[in-house]
Length: 119
Length: 119
Length: 119
Length: 119
Image: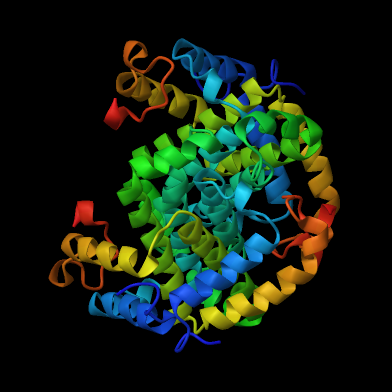
């Protein structure tokens, strides 16, 4: 299994199976899953808490296994959310990108991290 | 584009292109992206802040468009992280699931949300 | 020491002393402290992840010691932020409450959790 | 009102009054408040998202009013949590500091941000 050949659907199914085997769907209402998503994202953040931006590249390499594990956890909750609440992720990303492209036209935001409300 | 036919790689490329057009890679060190991941996950959480678990299903349907947009934002940052820091998400999820299966064997955790350290 | 007789300043001094003894001020730029604040707040959230609103009262009593510890951690980072970046918390809360009272006039929001933009 | 003369209890009462006038206590179970705490902490984090550690000092001064407002929001939720769930913050901080001092003895952690498990 790798990103070049695996479809989103296949990954979703993989996550679904793991959860259903454990009968965990009952806890996966939107509120709980939104909390789990924040919780897992914060595990990634915890790995880069006290270093500066430049040092964070080194931290990542030093702890690559941990980072990949935490990123996998975020992805798992995200896919569980999509599974359980019927979201097609590819469509959602495509739709959102159209919206973002209007807020952040290339010529206005190139090389800047300013929020669109302040561009 | 939909989840049945789209590979992870294709979605990653889509995100990459959007970011490179805007020359935003320079801000995408691990520390910043970990913060962006939490920030976007919290946008999902904000939609379910004051309701209870049962009501959160109704909230999701009432605001489905917003929810899908925020989920897309989380996915976008996640894929940017994988792109920029060379993580194969399918492999990472597979590896993590093997680990999780050991911590949470079906017979011990079925239908329970107890943490593995307390099982 | 208890909340009836302790001033904010006294608590701030207590936190300051602990940090200066360890020479940790050098890591306490606004960016890092904002991350630490989220990290500690998420430790509180983790204690109530899978239960529902009603059950969370029981969880709190069952794990009161842990909850109080995590709340103390959030407060410590908050006071460190105020110390290091020269914020008078009492004034900040007073000023913000005036603002909030305009957004949420009693007669419009009583008993509702609707956001002011949707009231 | 300022930090030198205001007790924690006085601030707690101020927050309590605001909430009771609006009849919002009903939403303040531990689960919801833990989410609100993360939500408000993330508002602080959002202000320092793309800058680096050094730049974050300048960002803070440029947006001091916003920062103080968001810090006030975190403090408000924190005090609401203490009010509603009967936590004496001064005692909790004192107790936690004793524990932290054992995990982080001055001679071992001075000038380092290493986690105690790795010291």
